[in-house]
Length: 149
Image (tube, rainbow, N blue to C red; front, side):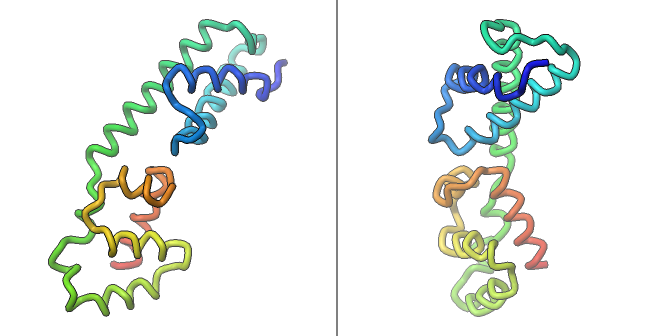
């Protein structure tokens, strides 16, 4: 049975063909997702070739495009500015927001402060500003919302 790490070059080629570089926020997440797909394929078919396997390359490329489409649709639907509207962010409530910030876990406070400082940013802009993957940021924003409630 072939080792999973033998397919890393193939996965890198798929990501490159899709236009992703190591500098992209999603690169590591997509790399891991594609390795999981290969692992599933190895469970079904033990003699997969890690090199010159056009069928596997195409399968991974199309699955990556599906993942990207799903991510883009998800981003289009989510508006982080809806979590904290402009009225509640006015200066008279800043002390309340600071108190709530102190009650949130330490690892979420930087994100919370970013939301207070830049309430109109989209999820994509905020994730780029914080150098964080959008799904991770979305989960953490949901955690902050739970602490506020």
